Amino acid sequence: MGILTILLSVILVNNCILAQFLGICPFLGVSKKLDSAVGMGAAVIFVMVLATAATWPIQQLLNRFEIGYLQTVVFILVIAALVQLVELILKKFIPALHKSLGVYLPLITTNCAVLGVTINNIDYGYTYVQSLFNALGTGIGFLLAMVIFSGMRSKLEGNDKIPKPFQGVPIVLVSASILALSFMGFSGLVG
Image (cartoon, rainbow, N blue to C red; front, side, top):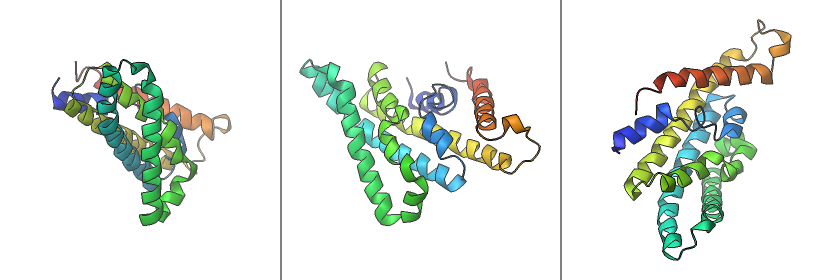
């Protein structure tokens, strides 16, 4: 599979949030403000690429010793270490972003999108380079969904025309589903 095909596929067609429904917690929790959404998206891209760079060779090692069944446990430990690194970096160099991400930053550790991309790389039989581009594209798709949804949520904030039963969480979920449906239009783009 070509690199461009992988990138287009995971950014638009097979978006981790909008098509695979992985990473919904930060998607709904951090998308209220654009700067938080961009910060979370950038942190997820960083963690996804580094996690893939570390887990792909580890999986080869696990396979060599015939202990591939430890994949999920090992991958979670690697991701947790990388998230701690990101948290320390943000706390030291960008404290405002660290504060705005709040509890959602440590939740990257349990973000299904990060674990999902590392496992998908193995399941799809990607080479090391393909895996890195898959992780990068998945992270960009995550960021794209976060930014678009942040824009949608900013239009909903303070809108007095929303019926009372739909105000709050219901309109957020309806908006998320409409955004997911709009991305289904890309489904014929990549085979």
